[in-house]
Amino acid sequence: MKIFITGGAGFIGAVLAKKLVDLGDEVVVYDSFVNFISPFKSHYSDYVKHRFIGYEDKVKFIRGDIRNKDRLLHALMDQKPDVVVQLAALPIATTSDDLTEEATEINLNGTINILEAIKHKASVKRFIYTSSSMIYGDFEYIPADEKHSTKPKGVYGATKLSGEILTKAFCKMYDKEFVIIRPSAVYGPTDANRRVSQIFVENALAGKPLILHNGGESRLDFTYIEDIADGFLLAIKKPEAANQIFNLTRGEGRSLKELAEILKKHIPDLVIEFGEVKQDEKRPERGALGIQKARDLLGYSPKYSLEEGIAKYVEFIKQTGVIKKEQ
Ligand SMILES: NC(=O)c1ccc[n+]([C@@H]2O[C@H](COP(=O)([O-])OP(=O)(O)OC[C@H]3O[C@@H](n4cnc5c(N)ncnc54)[C@H](O)[C@@H]3O)[C@@H](O)[C@H]2O)c1
Image 1: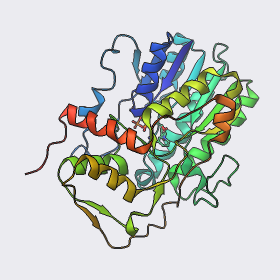
Image 2 (image 1 turned 180 degrees about the horizontal axis):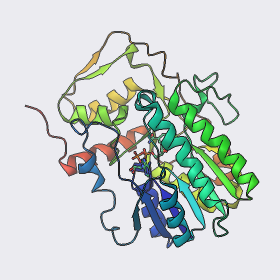
Image 3 (image 1 turned 90 degrees about the vertical axis):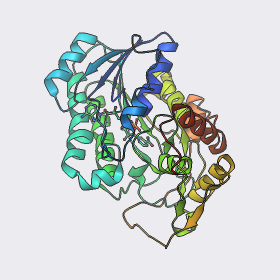
């Protein structure tokens, strides 16, 4: 198969691209190589160069923006892929709330550009759209399955949900299969978006204290990068995935306190502090997602517990030497 991955140079896309190459598929990455974190706070360039080691010549890279309709259309006309996977996004909820216009242009209009570009491309049989667990808003029950109501609390979740609706409508109109994937709290080597797991791991290795708000009781469905990438493979390959929506996560809610305690096992002198109660009304209250549908239809079976995933993540950051212990 030939797979065209928008945002394929990113954290999730790179692991997916390498797995596809290993399976003998042809991979085209269409990516603008951006990071939305301040360069003073980010290790983006340090991590990004680790993403394709040994695969630089096995993947075709096209530098391009999904907002650029002409370039996208020409790339798709030239490449004639069987499947298009849309991962390109402004992927950070807080930043999307601040940069509303940019988030809408990339996450929503960019997705529409891809749908427009593939609608008359006979080669493209399937479109995989990457949504988010943020489309649910506050979880009303746990585990939240795909039938849970969708009430996003911010711009990011709203753009992702709008993209889902457009994906379904376009694919029905133009007779393409779609698969919608809702990941949550993906963590592991080369993440550069400073989500909570990256901040905790890097701060712990730098010798800084970890500060837990609300007693560290907030729960997330932390999903190791290899597991989500395996889930995408199933969404690309399995006939049963056609026209379905899947939560693809670990399927367990783990607290930030548990994450800190796991890190303390690797870094015994880690200091864990409890900060004042900070209730951020804009962040949805989440927890475990239901993944039974993906287990039943796709045979999805996440392999990494938070303990196992964090062990691999810590080992990777130590090996890169990007984070140095502060004296
Ligand atoms: N990582 C998570 O925890 C998580 C959770 C839920 C959903 N998602 C979604 O998964 C997808 C991938 O996330 P990620 O963690 O790999 O993020 P990432 O930032 O590492 O990767 C996104 C990639 O998209 C590219 N990109 C951004 N804007 C672009 C544009 N306008 N045109 C072309 N390329 C562009 C970036 O250069 C980057 O390589 C995103 O859609 C994100 O919203 C991620």
